[in-house]
Length: 123
Image (tube, rainbow, N blue to C red; front, side, top):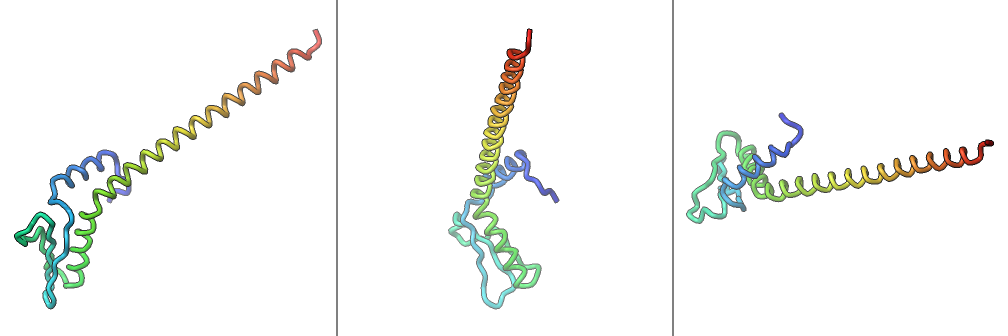
């Protein structure tokens, strides 16, 4: 499994998100039934988006809850990743600018030392 989300992955996630039913999604469960349903806000007729019923009731509920939370927070997560990446780039650029200033100052100092040495050498 990938451990890094590339810019292309983010674009793919956004495309998948735009094609999915709108949030919010919710888990619908009935007491005494192992299966649980996932519904979304634009399904007023009560038709579920997905049914989890192949495992134990506990596992079905956990899997359904994960899918619902993933869908409901995906917009925010993608936005957060983009914001943090922009901020990291800004900080890198600021750091590079500061480093360049220090290097320029060091070069200037070396030039001044040389000028001072040259001016004090006997002719």
